[in-house]
Length: 246
Ligand SMILES: *Cc1c(COP(=O)(O)O)cnc(C)c1O
Image (cartoon, rainbow, N blue to C red; front, top):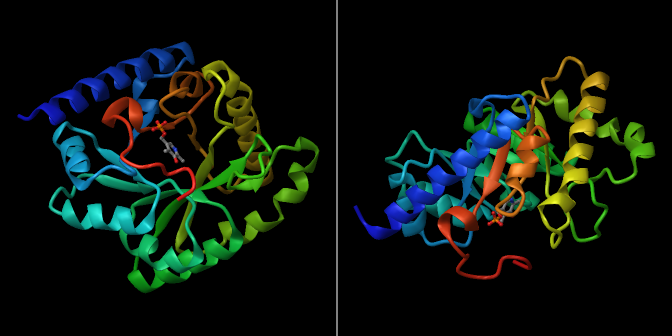
């Protein structure tokens, strides 16, 4: 068993323990929260080591990079691959044909393209709607910073919910960076409240999943109701290149 596998396993299990403790604080069991191990900007060997360490869900931000890893590790069929980054329209086919789950659906246009390519591939893709709850210019997702405009926002969603090859399962957000973990809490609360708002408008859609929290703030996210956390650096170590502007 090599050193990389051991160190990832140790940090993976430590992260699961923290998730479990935070879930209890929110009145839930550990099984209510799923851990996505983010291997973006890491070599294939690191993703392979994560699988060897027992990680069950891997998250990738870039379509090509993700597909390279998916193909390299195709014999590990129990692993789920989740797209967590912004997907350009021209990459929709690649995502529809290869990923098991998408956290980062951020436009009706992309939804329609994914639906079409899923139909061609004979697949149904579970998706989360990504929201920008902090109102930062640079962030992806539907702008949900202004609560008084939530009602206007929901116009596009009925169309997305009716697409036959996508299954909306919940919401995702990435809060503003830079604060401490506590600084993220109001954004996590806001995403949960937005989910409750959309659920009341679309009672026929099960929006049970909340994907929120990264290495720096996943415990707070779990306390506020996260069902998916997306943790990279704290488990697989520092990234090998800067992805902020990629
Ligand atoms: C990179 C990334 C993560 C993981 O961030 P870490 O700080 O490495 O835990 C989670 N979610 C998204 C959308 C990301 O881009």
